[in-house]
Image (cartoon, rainbow, N blue to C red; front, side):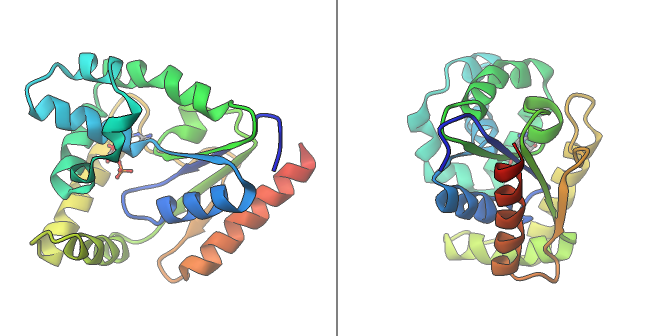
Length: 207
Ligand code: C5P
C-alpha cells in the first residue's frame, strides 16, 4: 500500500500475459488497475456501430468497459485500427494520465504506457512471448468464451495486430527504456507474477 502516486507501466503485445500480471500485481499492492486496451476496444466497437471514433473516445464512460463483447477477436482488430489514429490517442491520453497519478498507486497495461502515457512511471515492465505461445493462450481463452475460431485464425489475428501496433507512427509498441523485460514464452504465469512483484517491491523502497 502507498498513499502517494506510484505508477506501474506494463506494456507488451497482444496476449503476452500482461493483463494477468497486471491484475495480480495490483491486487498484491492494493493498487488500482486499468486495462487500457479496453478503451481502444470500446472506441472500435462504437466506430463499428457508425459513431465517429474521436467522438466515441471523448464520450467514453466507465460502464461501457464492462461489456463482454469487447473481449472478442473482432473487437481487438477494430481496436488496433482506431488505435492508429492520433486524434483518438490524444482524446484518451488525459484520462489515462490522471488514472496513472491517482493517490494510492496504479497499474496500467497497454502498449505505450511506459513510453508515452507515463514515461516517469516508477516501475516499468515489458511483457512479451513468441507469437505462437500467445496465439495458443488466446485461442484457449476465446474457445472458453464460446468463440468458434481456429488456432490459425488466432495466430493470423495476433500477427496482424502486432504488425499494426509496431508500425504505426503515433505511439508504436516499443519497450520503454529501463523496463524489466519478461519473456513469458517458457515462463509460468506464477513466475512472471513473482518477477513483476519483486521489481515493483524494489521500486517502492527506492522511490
Ligand atoms: O491489449 P488489447 O489487446 O486489449 O488491446 C487492443 C488493441 O488496442 C491493441 O491491439 C492496440 O492496437 C490498442 N492499444 C493501444 N494502446 C494501448 C492499449 C491498446 O494502441 N495502450
